[in-house]
Length: 306
Image (cartoon, rainbow, N blue to C red; front, side, top):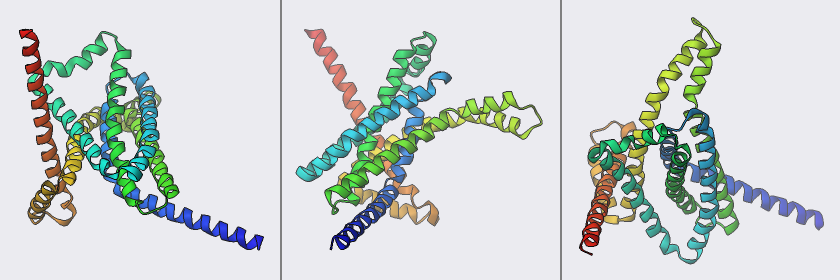
């Protein structure tokens, strides 16, 4: 009897682990798009620091990201169990923030181009600590919003599972996401250093030397591209969160996407919803920025009268 009970327990554990593996795989597939945006955003956020400080900054952001997950995983489980209706409004607030952050960056660059050079000024003055802290805080803040979306999406795939399975799957996704994203970010920001290393240790006409030159020339264009992609990702992710939260907007975007998809080849069918969500996110971001600017002007006038 004892042997039969042991085998029964082992069978139950094996079944549970198999279910967790399947659910983790499904959750990973559903969050793959957001993970790509997370990678672009964080690579863009931590760029610009001195070469010898790139990895420490990435490590600091990765630790902050893991702390975000430590907060978000149990919080998501508690809210899902006690107040499930709060998940969508909280997620939508995060979406609004992402749209606002992206629109604010564009508006600042357009209205005050010199403000965009403030980071360079910070570097030139040698105030590296403040510069790095600003970068790290901004990256962790953005990571919190994206991590919340990934956790909620993952939670949706295990909503009917036991609490233990939910916790295990969310924990696996959280750890894998943090290690994967920030491992790739660390590789991206060190591409130019890798190229320089190859050039120093190999002489032409060696293939390694030419490849090093390619990496060194490619790195600035990659970072510039990631900066643009990171800003677009804010609109796409934020707009996607908001459109899925407002039924009428989601239906409108789906209808427009179907019309546009009729003009595209099959493998480009993902493009129309992404573009439409980005446009919607950009519009929402501009509205929030306009409201913020109007509010600040009214506040300044009010204080002048006092």
